[in-house]
Image 1 (cartoon, rainbow, N blue to C red):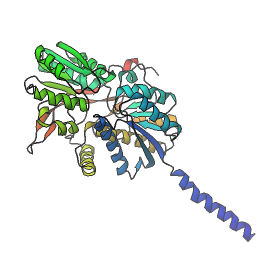
Image 2 (tube, rainbow, N blue to C red; image 1 turned 45 degrees about the vertical axis):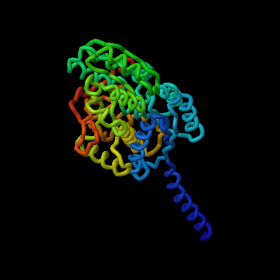
Image 3 (tube, helix red, strand yellow; image 1 turned 60 degrees about the horizontal axis):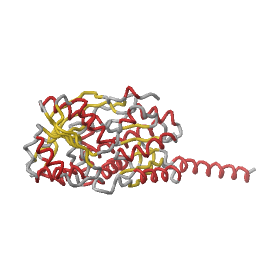
Image 4 (cartoon, rainbow, N blue to C red; image 1 turned 30 degrees about the vertical axis):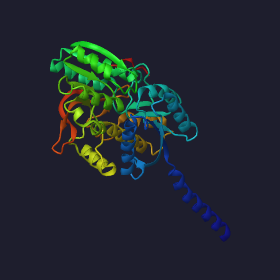
Length: 389
C-alpha cells in the first residue's frame, strides 16, 4: 500500500508541475512591416511602439506571454506574402500585424483573414478593407486612409483656398488620400499629379506647381518621399510662399531629417505628442526614455495595436482558439488609447477625432508639431455602408 501511495503522489506532482509550463506557451504574433528603404523608419516606429507596450507588461500583453516575430517586407508585396506564409505555416502565428504600405496590405491581408487568422492593422487602412472587402478578422487601430486627408480638405475649405495643387504617389494609398481630400475640399483643383512610388526627384513637379500659381499645395508623400520633396521645395524658394498641407506629413522623424524646410507645414493627425492625457503623457515619456527620441503617430499606433491585442488576450486567457470570444473582445476595444476617445465602427475601423497641426520652431532651434484645432468629432469613414459581413 505504501508503495502505491508513493507512485500516485509522484504522478500528481508531475502533472501539477507540468500544467503551469504548458499554460505559459507564448502567443505568437507576426509583424510584417517596412524596415528597409527610405520609408523604413515607418516600420521602425510601429515596431518600437508595439515593443514598448510589451516591455511595460514584462514581455506580455494583457498579462499573457507573447512572442513577437518581425519581418521586413521592403515595401514589396511578394516579400510580404512570403513572410506571412512563413509566419503562418512554420511559426504558427495566430495574430498578424504591422503592414505600413497599402500595396503590401492588398497583397497579403485578404489571404490572412481568409485563413481565419486575425490581422490588426497599425497603419494601412485601404478603402477596400473598410468597405466591400471588410472582414470580421480585420481590425484597424489607425484610421481609414482617406480620413487624414479629409481633415486637410475641410481645413483648406475653411481657410478659403480657392485653388489647390494636388501631389501624391500613384498607388492605392495615394488615390485614397486624394479622394479623401477632394471629398471635403470645396474649391478648385489646379492640377492632380501622381508620382512614382518611392520617387526621389521632384524638380519637374515643383516647376509645374510654381507655374500653376495655386493658393496652396496638398501633398501626400510618406516616408523618404516626403523628406526629399520638402527639401527640394525649400531649395526652390517656395517655403512660406505657397502653403503646404498634407496628411501626417511632418512626423517627428521627418522633422529631424528636414528641419527648417518643414516650418509652417499644416498636417493632420488623430494623435499628437502634446495631448495632455495621463495615458499619452506616460507613453511619450516612456518612449523617450527607452528609445531616446520623440514618438511619431506611427509609434502611437503600434503601441495602441499592442494594447488592443492585450485587452483581447486577457479576455480569453490567452486562448486565441476561442475565436468568437477573442473577436468580440477586439470589437469591444477595452483599452485606454493614447489618442483619447476610441471605438470601432461596424467595419472594425476607428470612430475618432481628427486634428490639424502646424510645424513650429522651438526655443532650442528644433521643430515640432503644434496642435491648431480639432477638425472632426467622432468621425467615421465614407465606406462603412459598403461593409456587409
